[in-house]
Length: 376
Image (cartoon, rainbow, N blue to C red; front, top):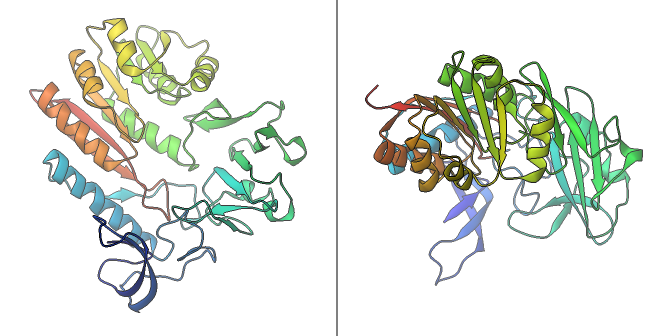
């Protein structure tokens, strides 16, 4: 039974929300706490709890407890799926206020009555809210509850704390009266590593204001790039890592970014224009690597989707025999599976691991793993 709104060690009364006698497992909500665990707190958001908004998992836990639970999950997955026994510490990053005010991109659902809100957990039912407590103040400035929206649509809000830009789309259309980018296009400009990056609507960018800088620093620290080296930036998105690594390997080096999403590729071409030695390839990572027939890469960055890189990509990357690999992962289980495959199929060992609390109040955790050839 998977029970939301509780903590390990508590005694609670639960209400089953999914499952019957024939089910392999049930889901439930803790509707009454009989014996509370140390670290339980009053949720800072009135919309958090059984039957309410499904966006946050752990509003009822202190940040210390949240990070301890995330660390335990990462360690358990590494042990169970990769056979690794590793101490894990989940690091806080600047950019939130005690776990609140951080989310720079939010998509709200609109009810049949034109009220914007957020959905219940594992449900299409909409909970009308006044404002989301984990949303960045620039997002909350849209004042959703004071507006009526087209029924049964979505309101998308994306903001850039660095530039103050705010993009609001309702039903897929830019709402200029509520603010958009300075040039009126469906994009915002994000800042990281002392550069600005264009991120168009539908393109990927980390939603925590401190995430991009934290991840760049961890990747550079793990790879230790040197002038003249060659780099593969796989699942490269808008070019965050490629831009920084291009500056590190210099004009004598080269960076090849591979990305399948058309919007992200267009942003990457814009963001990396003028950088020497940068090449952008659009397509699935495994398809592009086969087509390029690369025999050698000094460094590789992997930032795959939640499902992970997978065996095919692991094999193709291993064939280029990079001296170091930086793997950015949003799912600990997928990371652990790929680490096992890198060890078995490529002879790579885990050299370093950093974990970051980029999604406070939720169960999500981001990791950066550094791999080296076991013989090195």
